[in-house]
Length: 503
Image (cartoon, helix red, strand yellow):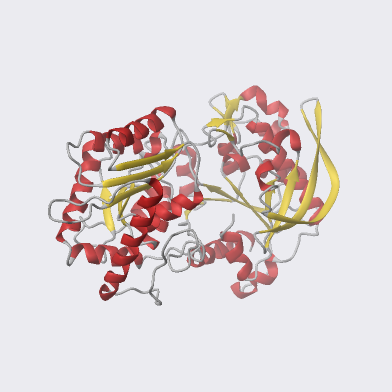
């Protein structure tokens, strides 16, 4: 929500982002508040709650609407403690508050043509919109797609019309499942407690209801959109998703990254910037990339007290970088096992992440065992360190069990990392596999079996490329750096999608 709205705004579309007024927004001065509006009220069961609406701008130029309710949002963390791993027990009511606040803000500020909501935390928004404005969707006249920008800047004036609703699933593994009795305390109409909406095998499922009540459902990569219609990736919702796919209502649109923020030439958080002018790199530019990597590696290692190691031929060990949540789905546990089982692994490793205690513990144990090869930072996210890892790493590892899109591999390639990633979801869509002879300009290796042996095999293949030096490794680095995953292409797809559901 920091990147897509910015690109859509540049295309002339009138965009507002609605978010809770989280406590951690306030001290960081991320929001410039301009207007404060009269308070709204909603009943959760028999308990009334008031909330406020404020508007302003985020990061300089993105219009935002803030739903303020201190009981629900004035907390140290966003989703729960320990980086969200331990979710707040009242998250259902917190995001019910967001949904009701969103509808109330529309009444004050004007009803848009389109509402685009995300994941289970935005799953109650479609129901609240329908019960507030009705089930009849707005439509516009006009044949030329060129009028889209002007049309989207209008607001709905006619009574009994609701905005069109787009629902994006970023990760199907998180569905917002609660006791069915909790439904009665969300402020939703009783009709939404049915198997065609939020009820799912006797539970209340926020994500299911959100996608069932929306006009179009999107996911964050084409491959993931296909995967989630199968039992292996559908997390119990594959039947509903297959039905949406069959009716043309399920789309996969690849996410992008902010190319201005993630730019090795201008990044202020890294020690040395890339000294190249053009964005399309050639093989002759490899020496600049090699210099960029080595300088940033030395600076990173100096900061974390890790020595630069070489083999008996004087080759600098390749650095493996990991910036990840340390959870089962990310495959980091298996990666750690692959290194622990490797008698004398020819790499150095830097890990940044937080998550499950036992995975954090194993990562910290690895760094204690191999103090000159492995550095681990767990427990909290360090933005500056993440940039330094991208800039210094030779290989970036993402052995995820499933990966809806993945942004880290896109960022890592932007910084000249060669990728070792699982062959799933957005990783499949963004990493060109060296093992596929039909692939042009390979940028890494796709791991078919993400157990410890499969990960070790992939890393060994990349190591063989690395020690060959001339030719193969140079090509991999340049190919990787030439992959630019900006938001412009994805934004055009969203723009077309918005137009099609309101015409």
